[in-house]
Image 1 (cartoon, helix red, strand yellow):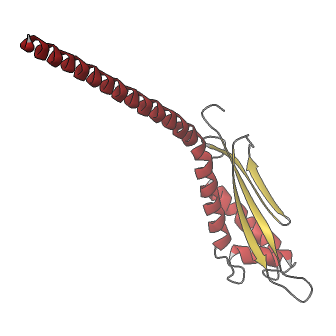
Image 2 (spheres, one colour):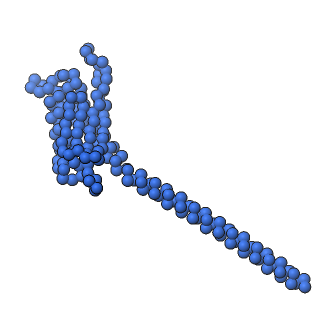
Image 3 (cartoon, one colour):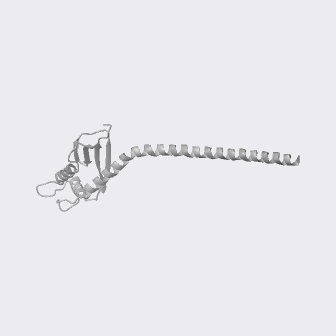
Length: 178
């Protein structure tokens, strides 16, 4: 009789242990499923961000291009293009035959045409550059645009106060949908 009781106790303990093990495994499966669901949600958000990322990258690239244009060394009194634009703002000349405005416009146009030689036939469809009285554009404007900004400091003169000019470069591009 005692042996039967001991056996029954052992069987009950074994059944309880089995139930505990089943409960622990079930809890572990729930935790794994929660981790998978959270991982899928995070992946979906990161996928949406990567879709928007090309615009950010394009804006950075346009800013880099605009910075390079402004640092371009010119033949106009050996000044940078940004300094020639300040000369244009102050109505100065590069030489006896050419104003700073005409020279700056011509150089910017040359640089942009060299940077985008086949507008309309590939990814880029057009551009527009503005600073002060200079406004240069070519190609087709599309809804997809990357923008670059550059502030050109204007030192004070006898007739003007210190300030700045904002150069803006808009690069229009196509996507697979357009």
